[in-house]
Every structure is written in C-alpha cells, then in structure tokens.
Amino acid sequence: MTALRLISTFLPTPKFARFTPPVQSGQTEAIHPGKTYRHLLPLLLILLILPSSSVYAQSRPCRDTVVRIFDSICEGETYDFNGRTLQYSGLYFDTIPRVDTNCDSIIILKLSLLPIPETGIYNRKQCRGNVGHDLVGGVPQVTYYLWTASPTDSTLNGQEHFSWVHVNPSQPTTYTLYLDYRPNPPQCPYTTSIKIYPIETVKASLYATPDEITYDDMHIIVEDFSYFPLDPRTGGWAGRNWYINDELQVPNDRKVEFYGNPAWGDTVRIMMETYTSDCLDTAIKNIPFRRVALFFPNTFTPDNSTNNIFKPSTTGVFDYQLWIYNKFGTLLFHTNDPEQGWDGTSNGRPCPQSTYTYVCRYKDAITPAGYQTAKGTITLLR
Image 1 (cartoon, rainbow, N blue to C red):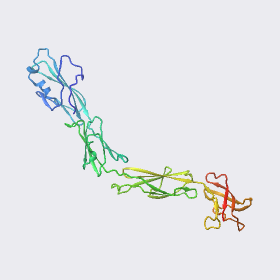
Image 2: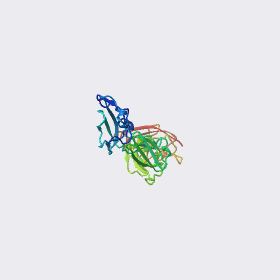
Image 3: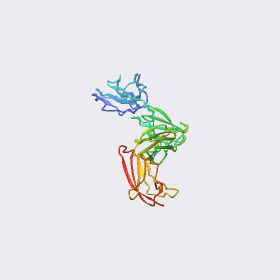
Image 4: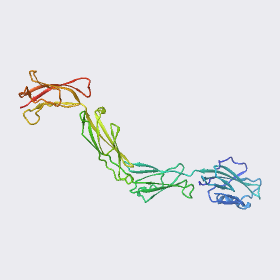
C-alpha cells in the first residue's frame, strides 16, 4: 500500500473547510464511536477524538474539517471504510458529525487498485563474450526486487535488487525472484522461480577434402571436429546441420560424403552449424570448383621411366582432338582420346630431340556449344 497523502488539489475546497496536516498510513483505528477507518494516523485521531474544547472550541460559525486520503489495495483485497467493504478503485466519502458542535469531519478517500505484480522470468542465454544467462523479471511500477539462488551462486552477488541479473552458475541452480511495490511493510508481494543449468558452449570445427574439386571428380568428404562439453540434459549429444551453398543437406551425420553438382559455381561453400541445448556455432570451408582445366607440359623424356608420355591434364573437357607436328609441318601424331598421349615416335620410329608443335581442339562444360583451340610447343629430350 502506498503512503497516505493529503492532496489539497484533489477536489475543490469546500467553503468554511479546515484541512488537517498530511495524513500518513497507519493501522485501523476508531476515530469516532462506532466508526473505523483503515490506515488513518493517530494524528487524525487526535484531531477528531480530542475533547471539543481542545480542537473544536471556537466561535460559530465554525469550519468543517476535511481529510483527503490517497490509499491503495491489491487485487483480491478489500478495504474497510467505516463499515463499508471496498474492493474497486474510486472516490469514496464519509462524514463524521460532532454532537457538541455544528462542525463535521469529512473523509474523502481516493482508492487505487494495484495489480498483483505477476511475472515470469525470461532467460536470455549468452554463448559468446560474457557467457551466462540474462534473467529478466521486471514489472512496471514495481520498485523492489530481491533475487536469491539455491544453491548459493557468487555470480549473483551485487545484483540482488536489480530487475534483471546476469549469472553463470557452475551447477544446476534455482533462482527465485521476490518483487513488490514496496519492501516494508509488504504490499502486493509475488514470488517466481526458474531453474537453469550451466551454459553448454560449443566451438564448431570442420574438415573437408579435397582442397578443390573438378568437373570430373566432384566428390567431397566432410567431417565434424567440433568441441562441446557433455550436456547432462542430452546425454552428451550435440546436433549439427550441413549446408552447401546455403542449402540444407541430408544426412546430418558427423562424417558425410557429398557428390557435386555442375551448377554449384566456381566456389563451393560448405557450412556446418553445430549446437547443444544452449548454444550454436558455425564453421565454413570454401572449396574451389575447377569445372574446366586443360594443362600441357612443356617438356617430356621418352627414354626415361617417368615423364615419358606427352598428354595434357584435362577436366571438364569433351569432343577432344590432339595433333602433333614437327617444325616442317608434318603430322606426327593424332588422337581423340584425352587419356592417350604421344610417346615421341612417328610410324614406330623415335623422333629426334627437338621442339614440336601441338594443336588441341575441344569443348568444355562452360561453353559446350562451341569448340575451343589450344596451341603451343613441346620439347622432346633424349
């Protein structure tokens, strides 16, 4: 209940009215035989109960005493106003006549109905930076808060009287919030609790191979190497989702093999999000997609055990043809198989050490409708 106050501007001042000093809240007292008023201070009692010779002895015409009271009750409570049981907000009036004078005491009550400050506790989890729980339980107009923890939590220290607190318990803890419009005496108290667990953070980490994929081999293996603590609520399990170029993939196992799509683009973006019951973290791996590749070496050695065949390395190439010419323009070798190379011979006879010209015509995955041509030289060493 808020303190009672004398509000001189509450109503127009009656003619021939006398006002008492400010009225404070107290207990139910009798201020006139047979009449009781809740919360009127003994000061008011003194004004109204003392013998008339002490207060009311005055020459007629006298002035009435007007007492204005502002008070409040909680929802569900009642207010005793001289035998009248009040339970709604409003203005209430009563008059106390004096038998020994012509002056009356007029009581004007403005009664307010306060709602019970019922609330829940909202738990906002912080997984990065200042890790912990933000517990929010504020209610408008409420000015008194008291947080307690069971078992005791040192991270609550210094925040007990805030409307919200930041805590980071090391064990499962129940936090209780007591709130009211004033601390003493209680007015409309309300208590609520929440049980929270230590924050289960997670650090996402993934491994993907190969470092790049090609049009001919779009096979990708990904694996989750995230760190997360054992969460007693989930039996130590953390979940994950895999995304390729922002599209959710199935399955979501710890290790997964994916097969590519030519429409993926020049870079394949692999993202994994992994989570516990509290927190989520992500890891990203970008893998280049070499959809077309055609590489020609510039030397080869037919007489050695290695590097003894001349052929290009191809990716995403089809409708392929390769011609080899000597410096006089004589055709020495031709093939339409990218896996078949030139062994440095012509008609079964070894060609001399020299520089030769190659011409390659092909189509690729990027421009499949038209042919492209690559030309260059190759040095044969013996």
